Image (cartoon, rainbow, N blue to C red; front, side):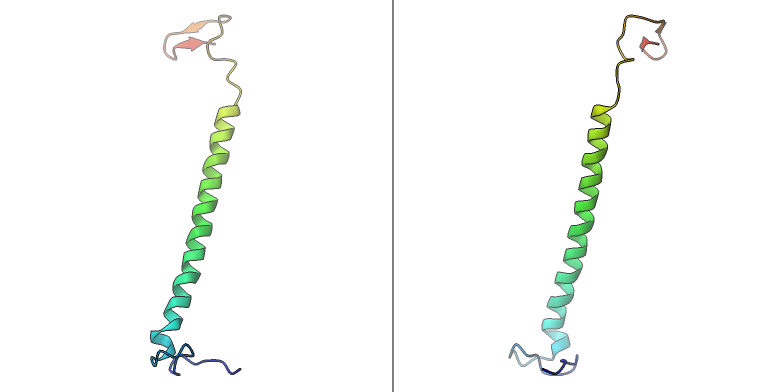
Amino acid sequence: MAHTGRNDACPCGSGKKYKKCCELKQQKTGSGRLLLVLVGLLMAAGVAAGIAEFTRDRNHVGRSQGVWSPEHGHYH
């Protein structure tokens, strides 16, 4: 099968030129995938940051040993 040029009749049978019909549809799905991948990566980074923040060592906050710091509101 020969490659369809932009100015050739669209192979879907709409009677339009390929550039005004199916080429636009293919471009939209390609950019949609890229956007989906980017959003997925941002969400994964956010989840990783949330897990890291949640699992960070917090033993120094609220201990009764040490010196009370009124500026910070906890013991050092």
